[in-house]
Length: 296
Image 1 (tube, rainbow, N blue to C red):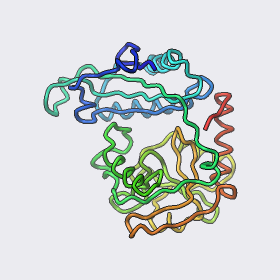
Image 2: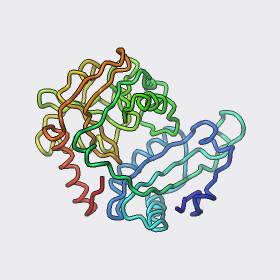
Image 3: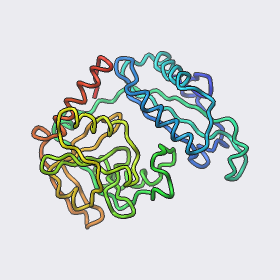
Image 4: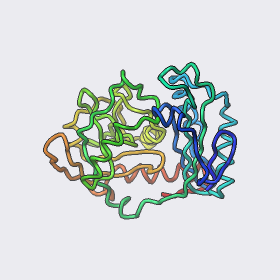
């Protein structure tokens, strides 16, 4: 696999950055993960808008236009002969002197890594997955701006480790007010009495690209949708739950284990009968319409 680093494509075994890079030293950078269908990067414009917002909020100037970034990403696809797959675009503040001062960091590091696809098993789509409510609280929105898709993922990693220890595949994190925030790599939705609910951005969450697609799909097919504050008991009492991200798409939740309450477990309905199944079919059709293909 060929990896792009600062203007060059190199073999993955030769892909290195400086040990003094602030992305390595401090997690000082941002990233986007993009799905590729039929040699087309799905919703690239939306990802680049979010990327540029993240960079701006961190005062990182890459001196690279959206068209130039787009060209780099498509070169990565071509150089790795990828028709259907995943791209990860990472940008750090670059190499700097010892300490936290960013004034001397003038040359950001840009990396693009390509991955082959790993399709979700059919039974996962059909039956759903187990998740937990994590005891690891989400970073406060006034501490780390949640609109920044940051390389600093310690909170997410610790919550995901907690899920892995319980054989779950995702962890739902609460915010400092103990309201439902988001998953470690996903946005959360629930359904109650036919209404689709998702945490409002003011809860302190990332504005997911797939999250917005689902909101738009709900409106298009006349499903009631509401962005709101969701208390923990509401997700436990939901009729169904699902989560979203750019690679998984829409994943139905079959059970929740609550790590904030003695690991109590709650079961949910089969995907064959639920709203997430309807939304997933519409999501697939949207991708096919925009790219001509769908994997997942």
